[in-house]
Image (cartoon, rainbow, N blue to C red; front, side, top):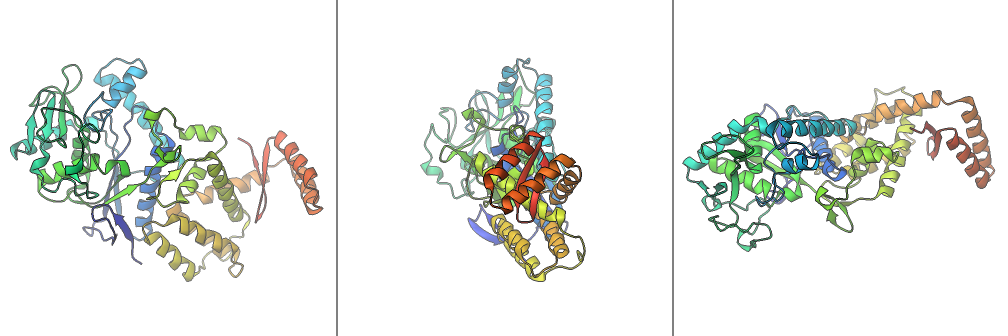
Amino acid sequence: MNLFLHNTLSGKKELFTPLTEKGVRIYTCGPTVYDDAHVGNLRAYVFADTLKRALLYFGFLVKHVINITDVGHLASDADEGDDKMTKGLKREGKPLTLAAMRELADTYASRFKEDLRALNILSPNEMPHASDHIKEDISLIKILEEKECAYKTSDGMYFDTSRFREYGKLGNIDVGGLSVGARVAVNKEKKNPTDFALWKFNEKLGWDSPWGKGFPGWHVECSAMSVKYLGQPFDIHTGGTDHIPVHHQNEIAQSEAAAEKPLARFWLHGAHLTIRGGTKMAKSEGEFLRLRDLTAKGIIPEAYRYYLLTASYRTPLEWSIEAVKAAQQALLRLAHHLSVWTTESEAASSEEYKREFRERIGDDLDTPNALALVWRLIKDTSLPEGVKRAMILDFDRVLGLNLAHLAEEIKKSAEDIPAEVRELVMVREKARAEKNFSRADAIRDEIKKLGYDISDTEAGVNVRKIK
């Protein structure tokens, strides 16, 4: 079965084949760890994880790198403003030192990793810190300088985009149509409006270099780390759509100018989680939710993952707490089926469903239709419960909803329900059978006061302890 992926570089859906027989090498742009990741940020990592799981499901070996940006990412993508890590130090009243910056980075990198585990995201093979790769950054800039692709200004070293004729090829950006002050910064020392910083001077905070004390540009860091851990070229580079016009454009320019060969064959970009009718959820807006904010509202992380899978990774998804709650109800109904179904006949399977699932995932990770297939399978009375259970758990290798664990938790919770609650559940079922819904609702409230939540599913009544 073939896997087709939408390649931003060509603007087309292409058949994926690895560059070598050794396996698929993927680089994902990681977080800038000056603060917690919000749920919008995390969408990019659920997408990358779904891609990785799909590749594994299709039989590929995968090496995956997610970087940790802990220096060099300025407040503006156009090389202006404070370093975001400096912004975090000021916010928390910490000294402006490299040691304090690393301490801040370690704190928020640890929280980011906790979020990944909570969302059942597979651990990357490598998660390098940018600040540990200054030597590699300097080496890359030296090569660019030797090739006359870099020049010095009063505030740093810059890449001369006129030296890379294909600048703008990712996403077919009209470089000539870019206006100074919008996508690019006003800087009279730049040779071209699109030129970008390779190294920024800073006498107070940074590292020594041949050009002066300072720190690397954000774009240089990703080029240096991706090539160190994956080689050049590698198979797939992922990130958000906001990376297309600036960050990834610049990565390509500097990496390919230095090595004179492609950086990555496929470039995949995930759409944003939006608020207020299309605005990207962002820390700069001051309005964002962390994953732990969702759990405080009674939403399990897997429910947020389910919500994301209901849309294509390339489609903007508008944030809605009501929609996430509905996703949780659907997920728990699904897990409840697995918790009560027999495990007999699990060795058997339906080739038709397996083929269709692979077709849907193979069509640029079509998770919405893959989920629809799961629900169609649940309702299929022609197959034994054990067969359906085994197949859904197999599909979950790609979906990553942690269904086996959730089903076991539901089963365990049902076994631990106090007799008083079980009796109320039976009384409520009798009231519902008699169509006395007001009485049934009153009993639901009694059950909730005892610390349990009850929901009605196609597989039966689901009762779980309120956390």
